[in-house]
Image (tube, rainbow, N blue to C red; front, side, top):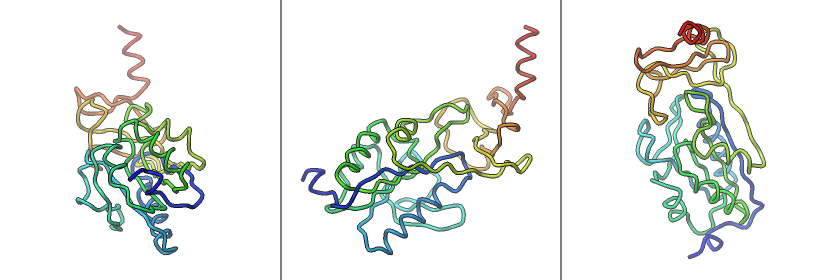
Length: 208
């Protein structure tokens, strides 16, 4: 069965829910999916196998709301798991997917499916994360969510790593990350497992 035979017949679009950690992205994704269910639309929700924090086959938010979800290894497997006549497709933690998610989301929207994607737009180094930058560029609607900075209480957009190594992909929660604003964000140094203030790092370079 082709993808066009599986897709619904409504007006398609891509919606992105993005921002830093602890900003409520998954909660907003689930809110939109639940409204689609109330409207009696046929929905599917997917999550990446790389995210090991939640329960299998369910998305669980920090406020303990949950929704059935299909765990997949790649965008190709996601494509293969789509059901006949699906009208709304939700994807959580999209930064962990491969770049094929961009083409798939575009194809689904072109076929009339509403695609709702939630994910981090930046990693702990404040660099673009996975397929999210490309998804942002092809989406009709983008909502940037903000957490609360744990240091000063200002709106926080960055995911400050506070423990672990230097790999971009390091799954963790409050034991490894904090929400920080621009003023309170500092680069993370894995050798010392702590963040080093920007000015201190700059001084070290000048002295060297």
